[in-house]
Length: 609
Ligand code: GLU
Image (cartoon, rainbow, N blue to C red):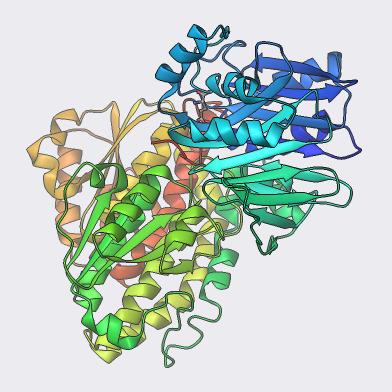
């Protein structure tokens, strides 16, 4: 999931790479490095650990030069160390490469290259690339990169520079994301647009098996046969400050607080009035297509999978279409039966999630129509989908996804209601009430965000505990799983998300005074059962934090603490329930002194399988 960045122009390349890497650090922070060309020589600085270490190293001994590439690493092959850090160099030290992805046939290539006399320094898969480029280099860097790529299997986005051609930066990709930023008398490359947004809002999104030859004044895009590609310039739709913390301690905190406004943006133009039909531009399905649907398959990873669970529930409940939800990584190792008229909904914040992209290809190959629910525009998944509904969350940089989750759920609610309207599968008054409730959700979320001090007080009572159980049922089972995931990924507290109905089949054995339970008991069909489960936990001296609707005296009496949420129809409640659970996880992690935006071992956009 590494982040790559590159610059060519007349300013100091190392500084620009460093500033781009700061916005890419969510992709990995095992090590960082830059290579810069100066006076016909390549100079490299690499450090283990976070980018701050590279910043310090460059402050101590700067690397002047106006052509450079940089990298922040999430190690796949070889432990985090200076030698395994990127940029990697050719034997003669004249070619430097940064890489995001995995070169699958690196073992075989390495053996061949070693037999031909190349000397490797690291144990990474990446290092075969500078040696291959060196092998093919005869005074034309792009040609050497092209030849090298033809030998590779796997996934990559590369930035390559060569001391013999200081006015050139070569970029290429297969599967891993890459954009080229367009400046005046200067150009950039980056793993995502956010990294270079402060410098430019004009980019080319590079496609699979495409090459870019970049000079300060020109960008030439070609395929691997060197046929020119006429790509449209993409204008980044958000302002430069969108990728800054704006006074918040962490991106995660900023993003939690952006949710109400983002929900207004997500609803705008799609649902403005409960009496008007929902409009989902980009979905690309006629009413007949929607009526003909036989099945909907939701596929996603991590947090987006939890949104998919909500999607599956509401799709069946409202649109009356058989629906399933699968983890993308599991999907690929199954041999699923895809019926005629199957719609696959791929959910991904970045649109680059490797497992989800592979699942998409598999489903498409089996004849499914693909509609994706994405945040980042013009991503790989977007380009391979038949239709895309964007969640309109704006850039999400915090590794722990927050606003993307609630906006994914909101978008899936719109999708299910749209299908229900077209299929006439739910009573019109129910659809109308749900639409009215969805329109009220942004203000309810704003109110929940104002209650942050109360959530913080609850967090203060539990943050020193090491184990947690999150229980929910029905449409709030995914809320429990997502709440537990949020807590474990940033606080490292062991947390399990379970169906409350499963409690007696195992997890209740964990209950004791040292484990706290978060029980989601909002109004709805499972409310009574949840209160029963809370009693069972209390009877075993387990402390319980309830999540309940404002004014619920029963829950107030049963639980040690309550996180209050305004009432709304149960089918919509996963959105409101998510807010206090995000804040609870955030404050517990903060109280434990963890680095919330850079949790250990994690990176945000999982672009490797
Ligand atoms: N495979 C490369 C390495 O381990 C790049 C990893 C990645 O992109 O996540 O250094």
